[in-house]
Length: 362
Ligand SMILES: [Zn+2]
Image (tube, rainbow, N blue to C red; front, side):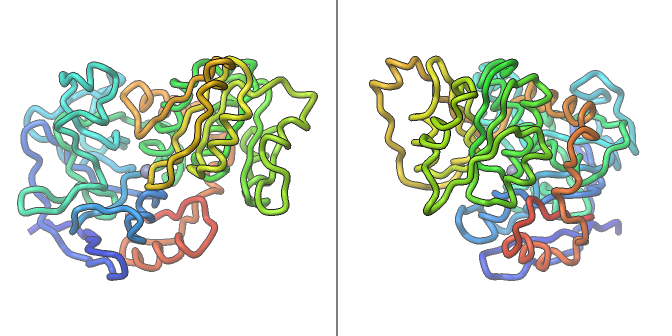
């Protein structure tokens, strides 16, 4: 029998269970993928640490890249950009599968449709298996946006497309054009660095990055950031540091990747007239933030939130990586030295180290 090795997550503090699972033949509309590479996203680490809860057992990992192993009957023969799909093609796919005709999907929010299925987040059951990146195979459901990738791009970078790059692409869609504007990025982790690179490529005039880590800010300078603002105890607050940058036009686009309430409040206090703040970092439970409604009114501010992304964002992300993967040193952000059987060590290292991403060859 053809089997696939899968790393099952049961609960915090319990080692992963490596199991050989029977590989199913893809059903109608389905595509069987041989996973090649998975990077551990921050939300994988939060599940691993018990900061967020998934129904278990589950197969974590949703930043995945792989090759088509088999096409089921009625499976799409072309991808979301019109390219043909054949066995052996390298593909990336969206984190979600959902009915494109649902009201949510038609409103541009397929990631919240009623029939949503999310790779790397689903419970393993007798009828639903192999739906995450930490396994040798992944079975793609009907209505999964799929894209063929032909360019020679390192696997660890390609794995980032379907969460980090696509989420940031969505945040820039909500921010509006960044061309010739001053952009503030708070939180210089993976999302913040991708945001800086995408804003640079999109023609931002000045890009400022704020973080509590000197190392992260130093790295940010390699991803298009012009000015860094070090936050933390003993340092001037964000608003004060921005006010001191008198040679820079006011910030009119802010992307918060930190998810830190005090930082998000400072971002809203610092935005220039007509500015837009897009919040993408606060994807975990925390205290409510305070918003000065009078200032939102008088300064004509826009506050937007984004969780995951839609098809347009996914395609934008792929195009960005294809065009700019050589311009910014993304591969340097991924520690590439673990295999699937070392999944426990990989998670332990990801939690203990300051690595932007830890990658697993599957
Ligand atoms: Zn993610």
